[in-house]
Length: 201
Image (cartoon, rainbow, N blue to C red):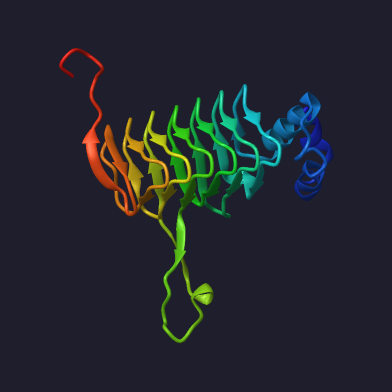
């Protein structure tokens, strides 16, 4: 199906075609969403589930692995020349937002509903220019394998969340999170290290 739509529709026509299936709840709607994402993205793996209302911008920058779940009403925005990588087995909750101009989510990341990620921000200089008219600076965001990002958390530009770490619900991550750390709060602060569930652990 992806090969068929890719060969018969332009990139712009595919974006328009997607609107016919974006909100549907049927199996056919889900298959068409998957086929169109595969046709327009850099790579889309097998067994990807794209929820109703999930939308994208600049999908040609996106590499999505196998067994990924993208929840309803999620929005993923890439940029021309950027890189958006979502690894195998990633689970993304509903109503999530990704400013994915330079983003990597490694394998088996859990992403809570409503959580947000920003790879860009205006530099706010010079002072006599409205902030939204100042230069947009892009900084990479990386989330390590097996990390878990809580509901409504926010990751700001330039941060790395280490492997196996936990970011609490509603946290605002302004600096790097070490692997296997648990952080929470605004701004997010270290709470403890994760421990093995063994006697005395």
